[in-house]
Length: 478
Image 1 (tube, rainbow, N blue to C red):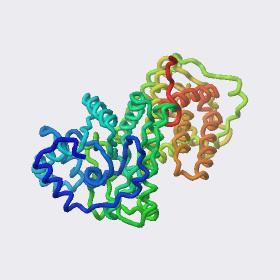
Image 2 (cartoon, rainbow, N blue to C red; image 1 turned 30 degrees about the horizontal axis):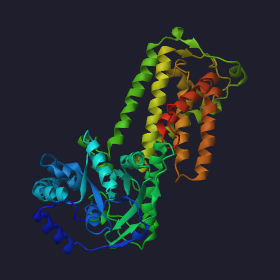
Image 3 (tube, one colour; image 1 turned 90 degrees about the horizontal axis):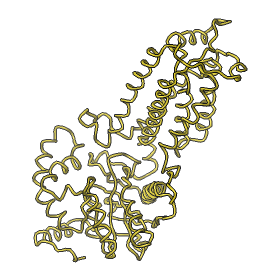
Image 4 (cartoon, rainbow, N blue to C red; image 1 turned 135 degrees about the horizontal axis):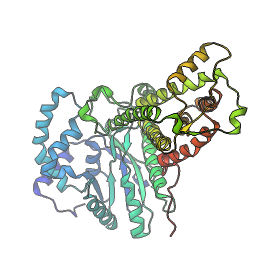
């Protein structure tokens, strides 16, 4: 693979690395298709790129962060990507080290078989060069992990590299293959899995999600099938914190949050690992809007919401127990996802944002009121006391559509899509949410109209949040 011109210094450095870096066995090379393909692997810090450059069979080019090729960016990028998760007291040392390695990085990454990857307007250059290399018969090697945990083997994959398959199909009429690759430095082995072929006839957003998931699951399965060993993670953490590949270790690690929130600082809020925390700010907006709509829109300016079904539903104070359980279910779900499933946390948070924003627009443009509450209670008990408290601060205005129902749809949708949630929990949750939706009518907090009005609101949020992953996007007819 000497088609790229290289400097003499690089050749010396490459030879020294080849001489002293442990040579791994590459297993499964017979699975590589005859046509050009994209190998997708776990980064394992410096190990993945070294294995790709030195030991993978065939002609190949490696995607590399473009910042590592430019003097103006390499130092800051190297510190942030390699060492920013080290203890804070070591940061001055690693900042100095990032300056010292800059000349070495510039030499290696500009002379190796690399393609510079950018996430700005220069992305076109990345895609154009990638297409040219594929046309020449080269394979591409990509390590798409980013700083969001996925499981005990991998960090989550960025998925835009899959766009290459669509571009390649348009250019050549051929469906590109993605080959999962697991790099195991502690075993001195690299394993190639079964190719995953791009389906050009499938909706692209759904196909992108499928390929990404299949790649991560395949790499995880390869790792778990091997003898017990230490996994070298994407993030440069303490070696004593490196996980094992075994299922036993997986169960033990899942008890810990997938993100180390102890290391969070406000100046890190925009880092991928912590960016989801910003979604919590939405609740400040929600409470502010609730206060405004409850207190600034008079009841006499509201439209009365009522239907015949409301008169057939009797008042029953015991349903208030299901009604107030909704608040706890929201907190429980968001907290569980916040600690153990960041993607589900994002999905539920965005679902709530959409339903809340749409409902508030309706409350302002078409204010509503219901007059279903009993004037007095026939009996006194804990449930009627709770209802009295609720009635005292929650006015009967701003009721259509019901946010109790809309939020419940989002909670149910996200939990039901979780593959690791037990069937028993899903069944219990469905019954629980159904009782919550019924409770809003039995405690006379909402009309049946409000409940039915929440259904299209939930459907809209469902599509906007999960389109591409579960529902194909709408396409304009040719």
